[in-house]
Length: 244
Image 1 (cartoon, rainbow, N blue to C red):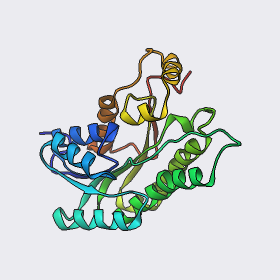
Image 2: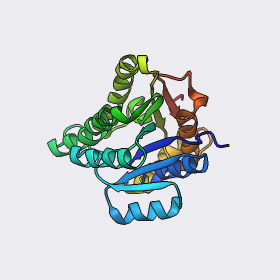
Image 3: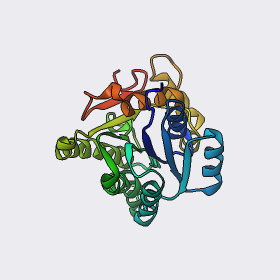
């Protein structure tokens, strides 16, 4: 029997990268998974790749109407949520002096506001004893030039987690933040130059980027009963990147 046998999971931003790899692992461990993505073509490809026990719902986690449609679909098809993995996010860079209103609004609109309303709108379906976790970033723990807005939006998530776990303690719902380090994903290819990739790799003790499946293994832990006594944690999965 898998670690997530019989559980229903919702993963936002699950059509690519770490979240897609996590969705695959969740299904392998016995869960039924709902994934979201903004592009129908990529979402269809992800559903096909996962292969079974999955529903793709096109939508933007920053759009509250899209979130309503997501959770209406979950309610109609399964009627509950055991695991909510709020992973949708963006990470565009701009140094101080070049930060625009559009960059600030879009970054906080998805990473902070979108995560907040993803969790809030999921609450009526969340089972007591369930698990909520969010994709943060080690960028919120270190100071990288050009990424202050992104880092601040991700730092917000731990403040959310501390407040929410206290509000949800009577339901025994735990709330954690998973901080990936530098991970080789399609999004990374979009935002990092080859030179930047080499720089980040030089800061990882093993000298190599993380892999999506290494994040997925930790996501399974946070989703499963193995993490039943883990609550309010900022868990860095970065190969020691943030420790040195």
